[in-house]
Image (cartoon, rainbow, N blue to C red):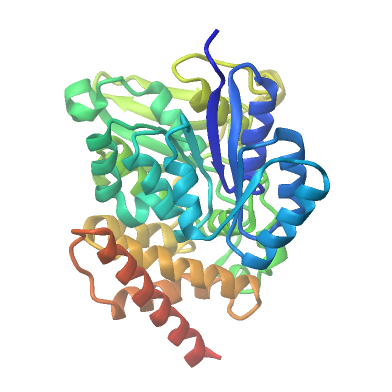
Length: 395
């Protein structure tokens, strides 16, 4: 009998990480949690170590690492604790590892995801920023190493499921005319511009369909999440901006679609539960049980669609703009957005200030070609400085 696959879960205490471990726990004969990582959330990480007994646990904070090490020793657990950003890359690229769930939110997830790709792993990519910031470099690393790249975003996973297997040779060559990314529209789909100016972080965190972390939930409310997915779709599927369309679909039942030149539109449907794409990627090319209930079409009864409004939600338009602009523009957009979201969550700016801050950073930071990862990281740093300077001026 083959040994279970060793899986490193980068960001194991976040929503994607927890759901990944839920699927792994359903298939102990197929998968083993090799390494689990967190920023500094020791209590949930300790509980995960107790349940899954990984070889390694990684945290970024030295004090948190010392505390976790002591707690594991007290409970007689043999998991070795590593500390720091380099340790994330170590457990992502370790020879014993078969698959890596890249679920660290934000730019912090870029380097370990890149390490997994360069090491030729099966990369389950949930970290948007990896492709948004360094899509050309990451896809080059996947090709050169022979890594297997499987998208975890429900939308890109849906497209992957209904896309011809040879799409890497070009969408036109396989008869694809367009990819259609669906979006719920978030909690403010019907709100006016005046109403959007007064929404609170608590209101924005109340997503109608999905349970996600705070950063991605705010991005969903501004439609920046969909904008980042547009950029991802370009790199994942070789789609030009004109071959990508966003469709507001409030029920979040159709997770995305692919339009073919013969008029066919193929869609992947399912309940809004991240365990479906996670199970698909873990088991690929097989299908494995995920714990997600069967979709009841009679209960849903209707499916609605509408065009996105980039006047009320300009973040989506900004994402299309930077995709067309190329170079480090997407890295600037991403960094400025991270600063803006954090500022909004801390009540420092209004909801409608998020796109204003991003626009200001894009105007101020010079956009250059991406030749190496250092180009991306320099743009990221410059954008954060520009965004924070804007915040200081507005204070």
